Length: 422
Image (cartoon, rainbow, N blue to C red; front, side, top):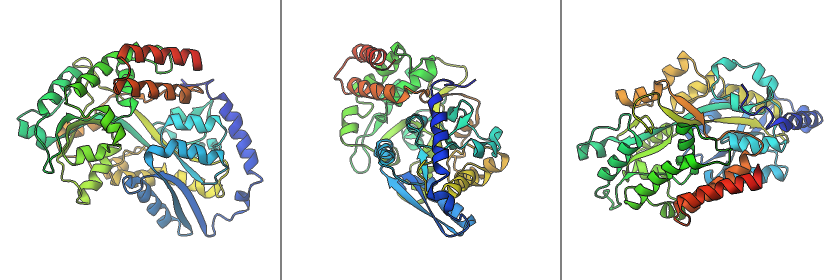
């Protein structure tokens, strides 16, 4: 079943137009076997090792190609890319940070149709492809497939004499966070029981995944319990308050890698970040991974996730080489490169699994990673996704900053979505 059969119907037509435009572009005149400089948009290269790992591997296999990253700050990435595309930017390959951005760019006809490329790929081995299906057409291919887990600091749990957080309920998680809020780090920073990053998904996507709520519906009562928990932890001093995290642009990696938090819900992309920090000598955190806490005990773990993909700019100068890069990055060779640095590839095979060695050796971490689980898409995709996302983000900030009550924020979010978007 397609998740959005009518939502992005316009994209297919837009993509077709983009292909037609491409037929007379400079890209067709270029010789892909000659020297080529391929430009690829990326974010925070020093903190996101997957990009340079893929670039280096592709260049090694294609000596005539030099990849020139177009680096953008992670927090500014979606809007910066939108601005670039609106101005006719010619960056060849565009990284789709999430499906919300994909919907936005594709709706505007700014991505090339990659349906033929997808048809040549072993799609039965590529997870996370479905959200990019636009009435049977594709304008991006996922190379990474993440889901959210609970990271924890083993040393802080052991020092407190508490068992590691295996299959918690949210009530147990809250209780543990308050117990673990104690003392300071070596440089005098307060140690919190948990850290909730400022993204709305930390509250809203978790609530949707575990209650079956629809973030596109305009009815958001299912957010209430998760907001109550987040604000209670914040008010109790067991989690850094939202206002401080937002105004000081706190980096979640710094919070965890310097021992300022004992727990942290976060996506599996962070495995590679911890691995790089430890290998680089900037962190000595003893870490593990546990399933995301649940509303009720027992049953299958429910969490959320999102694929990350590569697309080709409709104005790309090197279309054929761009497609070659995407085929490499989303195939088995690229997947083995990603697995080797601790990134969860979208492509799955025994060889890729064997290459993934970044997990801690403990049973809880390995079970968390490999167990069957229900992974909901972080945000459903439709032609209204981007507009609703903006409203939900604004109301989230007002609730978490204490400028609106939970009830008022949820009511206003629903009213705005129904009156301004639906």
